[in-house]
Image (cartoon, rainbow, N blue to C red; front, side):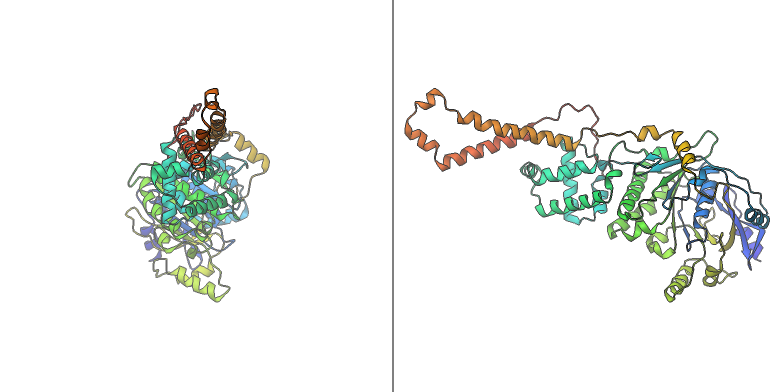
Length: 515
């Protein structure tokens, strides 16, 4: 009965990926291989389990198998232990014993890897411009209310209308400062009244993001998501390993980047429907870093993207210690669940385990809540989707071992791979284009010079003026006349500020992304 159920549930017509063999009473059955159809990997997934139970090696295994099927992969390497994907592994007694139980043959193999970074570390740098974030996404990231979000949209509209490229946070801060002070009259004339309180709040929020290291992900050159979806000359999907092990203490920065990436993928990729295989699979390790710091608006945005992005051919997989780390609305969208062992040290742990057990299909072969505490290293409870989108039977699985190195690369090996990157030269150049910051600075400097010149031209009396009667001098020197003169000067200055052209810039002006 067990064998028949597993064979029926895990036999598929199209291309599939083998994760291991189903177990009953602690023994793996080599006739019951747990295979998942490739076409369902855009239905998202979860890899969960306590520390030391093998989550990272499962992530490594699935990444390898997807690459071998010509599916590009992006993995978040927060702990810094996934670089070994690039090198072949080494056979040992444990692997030999495991593969005898599985009835399979193990072969050492590395896969093509592109190392990425969000800072000045080793690898190709990832950046995006402020304009590419757009006003809606930026407002959600900053946690702004409806009024403040409306002002951010107005700010982007102003920059579009006046050809002020918003490339980095320096540009954004300069525009907010300008609109709050020197440019306030100009923008109120064009778009209506603005609140000083709102501009102050926005400025503080942007500076807070900047202090968390936001400058490293905003700017040029902007990363093209097409470079995440490459196939090498041997037909293997390139695995992009984003090394973010220094962002654990900057969760807001990490969630900002992830949401930007998801929004960019959703906005730019065309609708594909159901493909035979995904165009890209994205694995987010330590997923609680995204959800713990996210506001409700940010969570709503993530939930929306998760629901819709699968039709673009993108699968998203969260890796975390406990399924409860993932909000229920997101968890319900995850088709594949790979659950490693959980530990019951406290009453709260036991309650969490019972709750986790309820997320799995009912099984006549396992007591799920008990099984969750009895799984060994490299073992997991698995359920996925078949070609028709129907959940597969729950299978306690002895997992295959990765073919690549289950350890990190040396600095020398990492340098050698990074030096051969096909895209590093394209993105690792330093660019500081002529943008909003420089343009507004030039405006203010010109306006300052104009204000200094006006008193000089009006204060020097001509010979004919000196011959005028003293009564006219008295009138001109009166307080009322002086106020009229100051008002006229201010009007002239504001008119000149609005008329100043933006010349000398040969770069293309980037328009904002409104999504």
